[in-house]
Amino acid sequence: MTDFWILVLSSSGALFILLAAIGILRMPDFYLRVSVTTKAATLGVGLILTSAAVAFQQFAVTSRVIAIIIFILLTGPVGAHIIGRAAYFIGVKLWDKTGTDDLKGKYNDRNHKLK
Image (cartoon, rainbow, N blue to C red; front, side, top):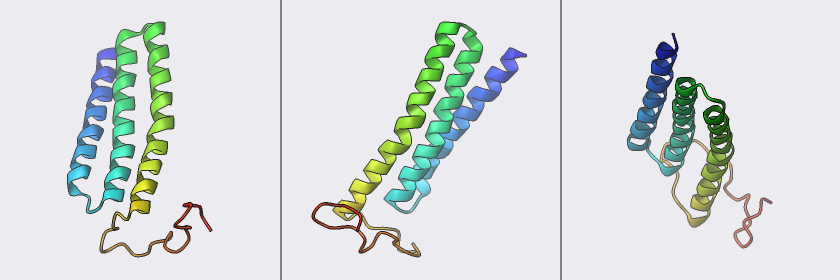
């Protein structure tokens, strides 16, 4: 039964990573690419690491897997936010069909703080 869960978790993780790769190619602008990559790759790596923990069934491996998953869950979205914010400040254009730019005119150009 464990082999079944290893297969399901690792296959699901690989599928989410594949979807992240396809999202990089298919999304029309930088901000959507960062969003897709962060969400799908984080979930994919988490599932693959979980399958490793199930496969080895040792406390040392499981504790490391949990630590790595927590680290990825904390740093991935924060890093994507910082990269997206820097891209917005240097003037990376939004997609032409973007409805609204909620940040337009709300940032001070000198110190990059919200007004």
